[in-house]
Each structure stands twice: as C-alpha cells, then as structure tokens.
Length: 243
Image: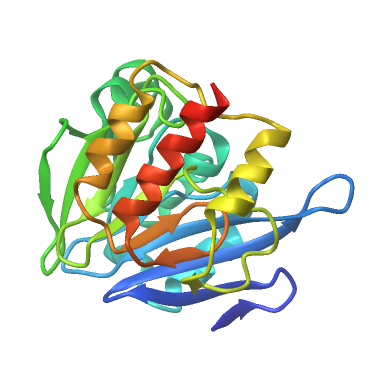
C-alpha cells in the first residue's frame, strides 16, 4: 500500500502483524537507497527504527494507516544514528504512552539524555511481551557497528529485526523477497565498509543464527524470507574472508 505518492512511501505486512514502512531516496551520484521502519501491531505496539527526523511526517502518516499513533507503546532502536532514532522525540510527542526501547549501553551513553522520556532498558536475552508477539533482545556490540548495538527477534513469527545487517541499495520496492540479498549487500558494504569487524563478530552472528529466524527485517532493502540462520552463517564466513 503506497501511503505517500510523492515520496513513494509504502506499507506492507511482511510477517503476521509486522508491517514494513519503506521510503526510497536518492543518494549522491544517482544511486538509489531506502529506509525501513518496522511496526509490530499488538496490544502494546512497537516501532523498530524511527527513520531520520526529516522523514517523521511520511513515517507517522504511514503508521496511522495501520494503527492510531497513540497506540504506540515502544519506540525501539538498535544503536544511535539518525535513521535509527532521529524522529524519536517527534514520535514520543505524538504517542503519549510510548517510551524508547534500547539496550543498557545505549541508554547509559545516549538515550537517557537524548530522549524526552526515560527508556525501557532491555538486558541481553530479555523477553518483552507485547500480546501475541514476544520480543527477545540481543546485545550485539559492534555488530554491525556501535558499542551500544542490539537487535530484537519476535519469537512467534521468528522475525529478526536485523538493523544494518544485509543492507541493500536500490529503492527496496519489493517488501519481502526470497532471492539473494547477501550478494547485493556485500557488494554495497565493500564500497564503504560500515562493519566494525570486532573479534566477537562471528560469534555474535552464530548466536543469532542459532535462533533460526525465518524472516529478516532489514533496515535498508527488502525484508527476506527463508533460512535466516543459514544466511547469517554465510555472512559470518564472508566477513571472516574479508578480514
């Protein structure tokens, strides 16, 4: 469903009760790119990634096509960057019962100061019940980057909200694909390597792979359906080879 014809912003359900909001943009040099946010519709609705502050009007309008903004309870982020939490305070103002959701380090070094409301801080491995969905938090320091990084997975639909992992260029017009995303994402990464390449990267990816995700909710590019564990292990091998 296209929610803004001018920007091309669209909303599509990629797993039961989980909606991908996509906005394509143009990069310098004419290359296409895109920003995704993921809305989990439940008794306590959750948005993972806010998009940059400048995208608040189109993102909030897209959310409102699915649920009332006032139903948002959690505004989650992996790590502190504009595309992760740039519109956080605008969303908090629009959703009076919402709070930021992040890991311990993100709260300690940034969100306690940046956010207009105190965050709900998640411990590594902690579960958060939303209603029909239960989210598990994983601390992923430096994966793909950022000391404070963390990711979430819905244990019901096996959807991994994987942030900047598997970033793909292009407009991201296809909401959910089963075609190769590792090749395009690795080709893009090699042009401007945004991975930290920490000593624990392979182990962190193996831990995520062991959760057997069946949908990868990428922040940039198409969401992907299939054997997410195998794809994460392939990514780990590619990064080891690159090092």
